Image 1 (cartoon, helix red, strand yellow):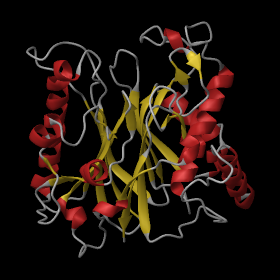
Image 2 (image 1 turned 120 degrees about the vertical axis):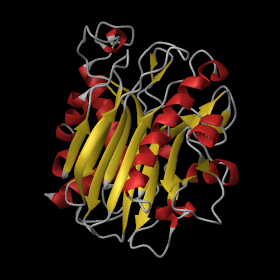
Image 3 (image 1 turned 180 degrees about the vertical axis):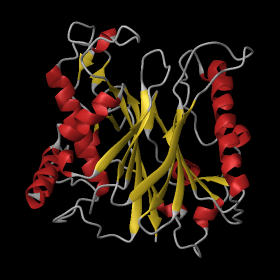
Length: 356
């Protein structure tokens, strides 16, 4: 049955490619999801409005219901889940990613549907999710393969703005600490920082506050173990060169002298050197979905490590479509305005490989 599952998954991915000659990156002829690699893959994906179809009176989800403005039906939800499955499978390549971090999921139910109503039901993924106080009800969450990663601690980190910043609620930060099958401990922060709605400068203080909150929790871990292996992923709604990353989180952008006490933003290299992006706004690509690691993970003498070349943006052709307003391509999203487009998300996924 595993052979059938893999073949079906790979065929479905190739079918949705934009052009016949373009192949999805990192596909393989693997015959099972058993470990075949000498690295762990950690993925992040803002799946853009993964809502169920039921109206929850406690949150502002009315538009994502069958009678709402977007006519969000069971059929459209099923197609959305299938698309997310295809992306996870394609990012995995030889095997499914060890950890899949997600943002913009409404609740645990949609994550259970992703695992139970797609071919991922054959996988060994388990769910970590907490409901957050976000007004629209969108949260972050994690899928992890229990054969490769054993969480021993996880918690939501609430974001409570001080009065001088303003009111309103945003997504919690998710912290998961666990042990890999090679007995390495990882601390993973999953983020979805406050949006730029209302203006980048007008909302910057909120993102700086959340960045300081993440840094405070990072420092607490490093205080107990200065060689802690920490990974920060998420849609930060800022670029690697913005103040929230440089001043509040203090994420370094130079990699020649590694200090275990520092954080290093690998996405700076993707944006400023490789000129890549995860999100396109006003015709310009930028990296909002970032990968940041502690110095200990950049030490090649460690049993488990990574490099600046092991952070990636997954930009397979099937995730893109021609940009009708600007030049080039744009991410193929589920809706264009209120018109159903049947795509994937307005963000591209990212992933990090950890060698061992």
